[in-house]
Length: 320
Image 1: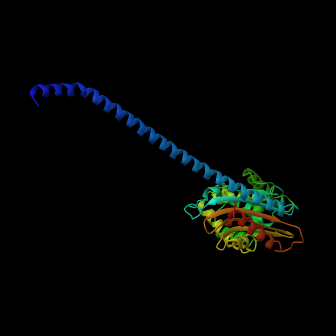
Image 2: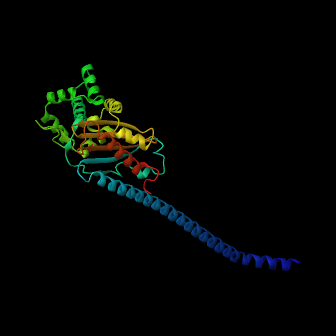
Image 3: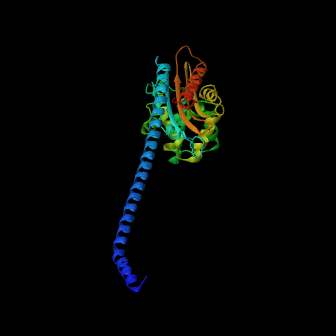
């Protein structure tokens, strides 16, 4: 190629270069726009999928809760229909770091999400469940510096909870007065009056359930962790265990119960905090009377109610 032709070619290339670069730039911009659009669509699709998954999961939890509560409400309506039984159930959720807390069903058992009661606001004979109110009042007095764990008080408390003996409870009630104790009970939002002159102590399953909620949570009169643990330990050791403890164990071996019973004439009551082996916890209060009950003859009924309630809420087929 001679110099003249080479110079002509160079001039042609030089003139065409801006046009070529412009075309390439347009192509690159177009490709970048398409790439961003694809990424946005992909992200949108992913977000949409995640939202659908979350929504679906939330819907599944709600549906399962509704099924459990409906079955439980139906059962409790049946067992309380003649007015001789009162039942309060409150799920406390899973113990932190337990197997239940890590379960895919943990959200189903969010505290209070399955709470169900029947005939729970009708005052019934408290029998020795009234001693839970005495225990709460004494812890309130301890917070105010008016009660301490002397050897005498420690022994009396033990007998009151473990053996369900009356001496210490009645002595403390007389010492502080019914009016003061009732006033305290009312201040907590529990059923009152529990105590009246010449009238057998009365309460409701709902009132006992509220007290046990505070005991389980360590609130109100049970803020002191050491005192709370002491009371729960005594309740775990109480000797009358053919009611809620027997039913809970029948439903699931290894279940633990801290409870307080009551028995008087034809009345058999039980109020407890139940912990399943997997860490799920719940409160159950059962109050029964009538039907010719005497002594502890109503305890098998309470055990059967407990077993059924626990199976409905925590059994293999719960919510299905």
